[in-house]
Each structure stands twice: as C-alpha cells, then as structure tokens.
Image (tube, one colour):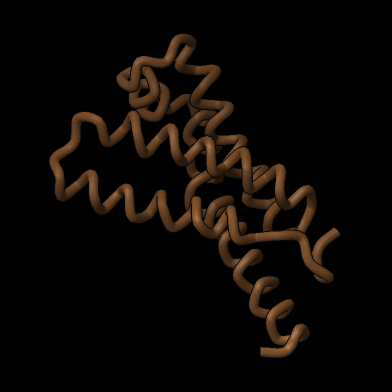
Length: 127
C-alpha cells in the first residue's frame, strides 16, 4: 500500500471512529445530563465513583469533545489517550458484576475503541 492510500485509510478510520464516539456515545450522554435525566449519574454512582455527577459530566465530555477532536484531527493523541482511559475504566468497572457473555460483548466494543484510539497517529491529514 502506498503512503497516500495509507494516509487516506487512516483519515477515514480516524473520522469514523471520532464521529462514532462523539455522536453515539458522548452526545446522548450530554443531552441526558442537560435534560436533567439522572439515569447516567445513577449508573456512575453504582460503579462506586465519588461525586457521580462530576464524573458523569467528565465521561460525557471526554467522549463528545475527544471524539470530535479525533474526527477533526485536533490533538489526536491526547483525545485518543483520554478516551482509552475513559473506556478502559468503563470496561473494568461496569463489567465487574456482569455475566460472562455480557462482559465479553461490552469488552469487545471497548477493546475496539481502545485499539482504534491507539492506532490513530497524527498523519499528513491531521492538524
């Protein structure tokens, strides 16, 4: 594969992953929090976090802003690192009490985002 094709493939992967993270994970959480819906805050509290409202907002904003940053190519490594940590914590804590089948399914999704985050290096198409 020549360098131009590799750059294009990584650009499309970065944009798709970033938009998916921002729009499918971050935006719905931010919208829920802004609407006063406490389900996500309660889920964070069940994970054992102190100040669950603060951590719910941090998680939602990490996914929304970090995903947008990935898609736009802004601070790509920082955005990917924040979301790798965010999703790793979610995978470990959320799945601690789950059945093996559910834990494996959600770990697969989290592992996919982690692997993509690690693979997304700034290239010619990034800022």
